[in-house]
Image 1 (cartoon, rainbow, N blue to C red):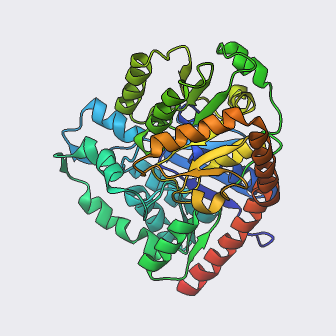
Image 2: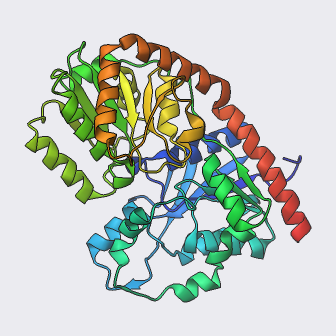
Length: 423
């Protein structure tokens, strides 16, 4: 940052609410904190989706929210709720106007694509400011089945927003961005191939290792009726087909044959209520209501989240696809071993047999394979301690938020240089 220059960084995600927290929210908040420490003024501009307050401060960072709509005829309240939860392609004219008026802007940082990303692109172009786009949820490597689920609420609905997308250049967001940031290597490689420009960079997510270093795991177990010596597997992620909790539950049911005293805890907001219903029905049908806990999503400042990591013996992320997997860093920081899917950004994040164990969620024998690996960790506690310690060292060495913040500043400077040449 040049002395005396503009200091405001406008972060623009699709939504930002503490009650529906996820990896994207963690990333935006933590990089904003690093920017504040560097003397910048990060502000989050977003929609009112899932929110009650127009303005608030979360984690010391100012959040401003604006009215919005989904430009489709015939949407029901249930359709809108589903779009709010996941994947809704919204429009907000008041947010766009605020982007045009915001004072002292150094750079626009979009954390969404489509119409909202187009609004950021257009505001940046009109103000001759650089704009950066982060791909958090996967764009070039999302399975078609998941895209179909995301688009289900607008299936057979008449869309009146296509002219707005054209007006804001929604399809040119990634091609016009001064820098495109990918959190996963696999998506970075695909983005470079498809976009045809050299402004695509890899920047991993980070973790506050000190924050996750210690917590009262015994208190978490006591609260939820889990004995101190019982084997406990944990999954923290949105309850969603992408996160593939059903695979973990089916494997856990098999584990019960040899480990009837084992427990399983899911924690996360329900972005696909129908999928959560499937999990509850299988839990009930298997007679495991006392052994499997399905807990709602928690605010990021809830101490129970960190307690849950310290309470568990093993963290499992069996996602169908995963751009990065920030919860893996959090588990590592708590010194816990991980089992993860060999997909997306997880392939580069985890070293099989060294900092974690891989599974193939698409394999015909995936349930049996995961069940066997759960059994191994339950049988060999020393394995968990070894992998957990290695994971913590990996997090400390390569993924501290301070390091990530410094790398992001370098990318911002590249964006400014490109914007200057373009202008």
